[in-house]
Image 1 (cartoon, rainbow, N blue to C red):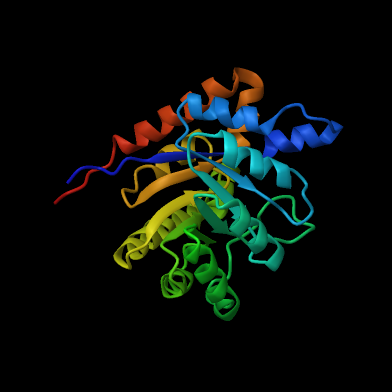
Image 2 (image 1 turned 180 degrees about the vertical axis):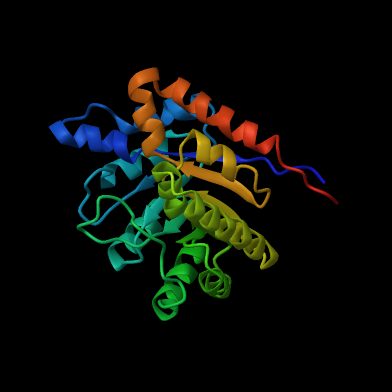
Length: 254
């Protein structure tokens, strides 16, 4: 059996963060998206937050019009974001939790606890041709709930594992990666497509790429930060290299 191709979705939120720090139009996140695609990104991710701290409404319109690869809109499951998504019609929408005071998305969506709220959201987005994914922790209960909601994709939250790796907490990192690995296997067995993201760098991207069930990584902050030193194209090439090294270690039997 062939090893599935591992896609790279580049999140351009923090290009917009830098733009918004001074106002104006520079650096342009749309240009960043175009450069990322030319450098090998398989898609672009952008998170339109309630407070518009980085990506803005017009960015979504421009991305949909100008980029040549799929747009993945990260969004909260709110009426406002639903209206925007239905109007913009991105290729995919990833439902994420959102708290105004958080610096970044701090945890996974509670798919199990919010089934009543999420069911009509998933159905409405799906009905207009938007592929829905749920950003969840690698927990059995959450994964089974995601499958029950009818979303075809989950994105496993890798942040806790990545933080443990960076902090040198070997036992916690090992336990968290085991949860990710087992969660990916369970999700695939339930018919879900498996993505992963949050906090990934070269080392952790290479490691998670060894899981054959994972077919897409969504990475933003590390790539944008690395681009300050090496340029965006080279930052993406370096991340691609890490992913390919990990994929080369995968052994899939028939």
